[in-house]
Length: 196
Image 1 (cartoon, rainbow, N blue to C red):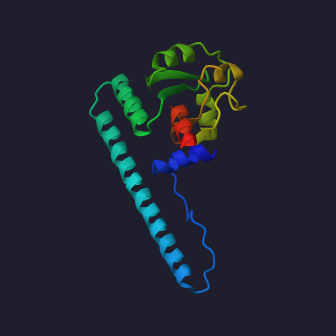
Image 2: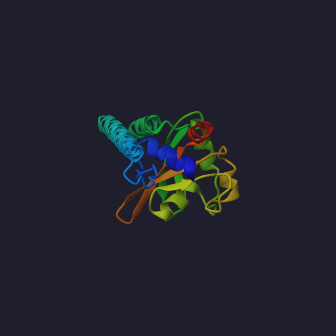
Image 3: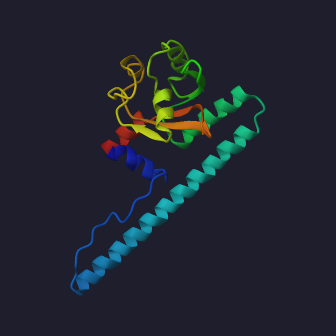
């Protein structure tokens, strides 16, 4: 999961400790210089982390303000999908509600090149199929799928509908009530981070 967490760290979502190992210096000038370099790198890393976190919170605030300015639920969800997809720089962002009685997702909004396919695909799932929305809601917290095509968390038929890559699922809940999910497809981000 290294590439996924590296991507999350670069967005200010996940933090790290000191990434630079230190070795004993026995009081030499070289040791002092190494310590100073390590302190500089660490403070530079912390500053970069703070800047990324501030950018993330600013964009998140813009998303909430844009959503609150919209009167229509469908339009609001579309704004949320578009802005969330852009915020996380993802290939696709899908928002679905959850029908607890039928135990199946209800597609509500999407962003990205697979937007149209999202609505068609979700509506074709059988009631007994283990969907991504069900898996995320059962986890009860943000859940990362490193390879969505190769996971036991969802049915094979559902997995085949996704392009190969990583997915980050965010549950939407209110108390014990399961409302739905936000699903972020991260394929292009992970691939570009691995190349770098």
